[in-house]
Image (cartoon, rainbow, N blue to C red; front, side, top):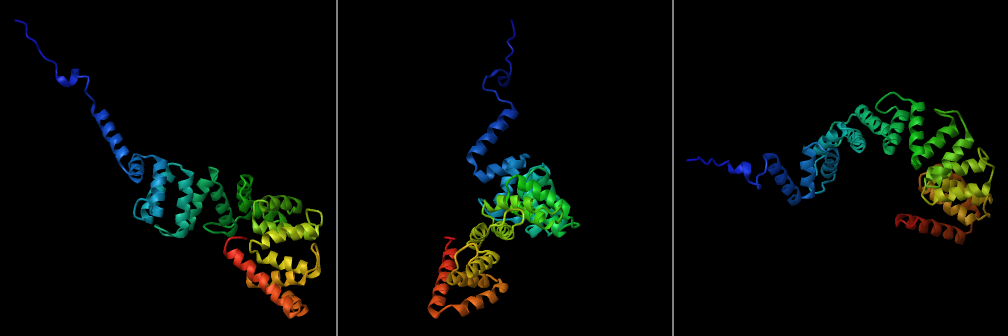
Length: 302
């Protein structure tokens, strides 16, 4: 009699799943059922750099998990070591602030450099500032300017303004007023108040651009309306003498008053002059203009 040997069911059943397949199904089910933060955690633990970055940000802000700076640093570090530029930048910031980790400006600079070398524009700008100031390492103005240029070429207004300043003063690069004006303008057109003020100065003096009092006042006004005290002083002085704008002592007094209130002590002498030339009614009008401007600035209308 022929013996019939049955094969084990697990080998022949079409419902059979390998241990790996079962684990994958369980993991998929978990990912579908878990919260977004838990999904980031699972993927982060599996070595996904982007998930590690997102989990770090969650711990940093307390989004979906208790806020925990030390854990944020841990996951930023894991992602940064895999080469994620955003994580490298964030880790640099944590080393600067000492949030969740002892402050270490040398390590901060090292991480900013790694991110900057990958093209992170914010890292390029901050690395430039650290090199210029000698923070976290030796002072190196020429290298600082190189990083400002890289960030400026990516369109960063702050870097464009700083690059213009260095060409204007000849610090770290040859002095070149025309090139300074070009970079100031790029930043000024993006709303950078410091660049707007400095571009106004170049038009006022005719350095790197044709002398143009009207253009100078126009740029100073833009900076002044953003609260730049230097520009408020120059705009007030322009109104006081009628240069680039019709003479108007009420407007002059209002802008000089704002400059003094913003901490520009040098504007006080000019303010004393304008106030001595105004009637009590005109002084009241100037004070009202200054109050209205400050109220508009506080409300975000300027």
